[in-house]
Length: 291
Image (cartoon, rainbow, N blue to C red; front, side):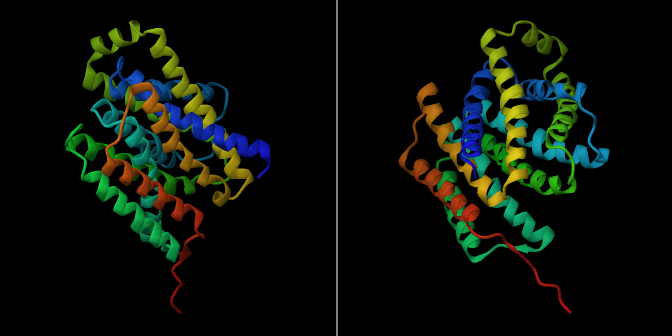
């Protein structure tokens, strides 16, 4: 990769890591549904200037509901109900584990030996993390948070159905498809009056967090990431995502004084290590067709 593109990949990872901290701050003012709706409403503003990509509405909605709505709503709920930001950033990256598993089940893409080893390592780390659940946050919050990587993984696979379209246009319309139902969920769950009160009494800190989440972390960062994936192989680009949990954990430690017990810290490092083995190994092989 060119040095400039390496810097871009690192920048995207840093932006996504800091986004977890911005989400935690924004959730002091907004409900999980409203924060997620605002995030995608801001990121969908380019729809005013770019045409809808040549992707069917069912495909567009299915990708949006998994890759964006399901992933980020579960993430916001988990953070709002006490799951530490640093731990959340690690759980989100475990989507690589589920993506490989779903790809093997749906597309017959058998994981390589090294990917299998990586899956085993990551699962061991998740078991270690599960051993710490129930002390500083509830089992229910952790269960909802686990929807996040699963939804993320399904969205990754559905994204294959949108080939040959401009990434910036696609992601803008995916954001729009997520924002509309999220506002409906917000009005139904929070009520019109509390929703209006939260919007009308938004602080400058809340506004800056939402602009960062919607305009920078979602719109700009996803566009840059898609551009990198267009110009380079996934094996060259995707490993940079491993920086995200480290940035998220470090930023959370500075911003909120977040600390990790020995078992949880060991589990987080083990999960990231397993993901690294999976991402840095060769691509999975498809199951040979029988004659």
